[in-house]
Image (tube, rainbow, N blue to C red):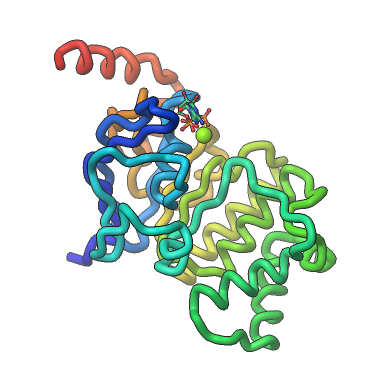
Length: 256
Ligand SMILES: Nc1ncnc2c1ncn2[C@@H]1O[C@H](COP(=O)(O)OP(=O)(O)OP(=O)(O)O)[C@@H](O)[C@H]1O
Ligand SMILES: [Mg+2]
């Protein structure tokens, strides 16, 4: 059995004194793809932020083990260097920092080594070709004036270049046209195939999942993971919605 990549153990997390995650546990092995679904406001993005170490969220109990180390109290920088990547639901705009410089400095920080410029450019071009992103974007300020879809593609470009061991994609597919979903999913597939990277995909749509192999699907309701299954759980949600999960969660809570 391979060593677990990520163990989330009974995490309780709050923001502004309101508890959002009420004891979430989840394990991810190297190379596995997990999908996290659930109604709006369930706490999915919160889990992404907590895993990335966003200081706005406070963990009151539980721990996070990544590659065998307890990272519960580690900074976002350290987690990124260790190989966790989060693609935001709403990527930030950074005027004055070009997309290319941003990716280069992130790689330098992660590896601690100078970058071989020629190889970097070759790889960047290859990744941009997969995503059909025009070369001119590399010199533009990070996300500034990018359309919604272009921002999402820029996130996947970072994923392909940074080669993390775990990527958390928070609604990377929302607002993308059909062709862009296909390209983004192509980029994610390249990461699965070439890096053997693990994924936690937070999504409301199944379009991005169609071309990807999914190992597990989890349903989050009101800060709890209430169901875990294989990819067929996605079809059940599509057909029936979240009503049965919400009711089951309510009953469990009532019994507690
Ligand atoms: N800064 C904050 N202050 C107060 N409440 C917050 C704050 N940030 C998040 N929350 C609350 O935490 C809950 C979970 O939010 P979260 O963004 O994790 O949901 P989500 O499952 O990602 O939903 P969606 O599917 O709509 O993206 C929501 O009720 C939200 O209002
Ligand atoms: Mg969200």
